[in-house]
Length: 100
Image 1 (cartoon, rainbow, N blue to C red):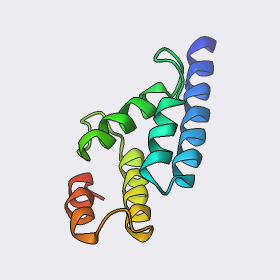
Image 2: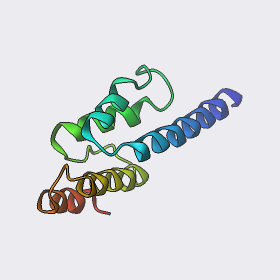
Image 3: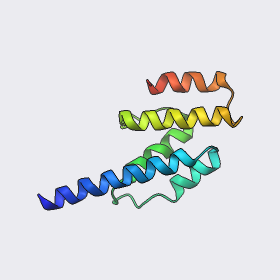
């Protein structure tokens, strides 16, 4: 049981770190760098980096996305629009698909 609690705590810490890092990203290059610098697949939180990489490929939400991930992805897409990376016409269907 203690091992499960430690894993859950490590997963929560990894989520907070991922969320903070993605909140700092305002360009595609920064998001891709986040994916590339992510933890190994067996590490807590690795799914967040894998999901982000899949999302960046074609801007479709992987089925495994949590509601919280959908929110931070939407915020990232909105920053891309604010930074002139995406036009609003491109961002709107992506945001709709994220269901936020």
